[in-house]
Structure formats: C-alpha cells, structure tokens
Length: 115
Image (cartoon, rainbow, N blue to C red; front, side):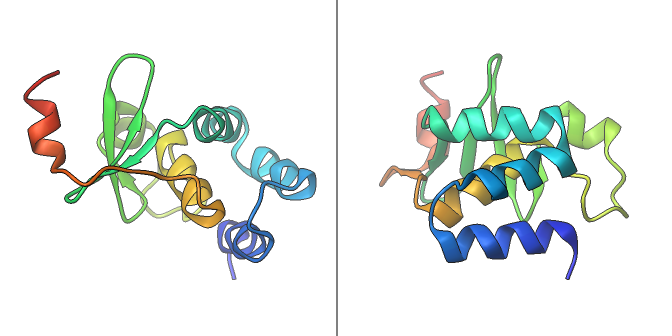
C-alpha cells in the first residue's frame, strides 16, 4: 500500500479529520496538503452529476480519478509518482472519505454557463 492509500484508508476508517491523519497528509504533501484540508473545511469540494469540482481562489478545477485540470497537475507533478497529487485531488480524496462533499443535483456544464 502506498503512503497515499494508507492515509486514505485511515481517513475512511475514522470518518473524520483526526490530527494524526492530518499530520500524515501534510508530511507527505506539504503545502498542497494544507490547502486541500482548508478547501474541505470551507466546503469547496462540489459534486455535480457529471464532475467533481474544487473551487480554487482563481477558478474551479475538475478532478477525476486523482487527475485534475489545474496547471500544477499539468506541469509540475510526476505522473509516475503515486504520491504526486495537486491540492485539488487531495481535497476530493479527503472530502469523499469524511462525507464533506457538497452534492448538487445538476450538471456542472449547466453551472459553467453562468460563470
């Protein structure tokens, strides 16, 4: 099991952000881990019928299967490293495991038209 899979499993078992798991997330992911936890605590992980989206400070980013539409994921992360995740993907993983995803019964493509 990778370190990412370990903290994800522990988080799923706990169902909440315990300090020991937060420490492991931050130790492994650094500032990305901090930003992800902040986004989850602020309710910025949204699930629509078609996508899961994380609301960033400048835009909204679509996250699917640990992949993200952000520039960090596109340019800075090693696709071969399973621990290399942008903060948006980490936020989705955290929110899903502690039941903090904000569900919207609509298509994200409909929402995007208004932005």
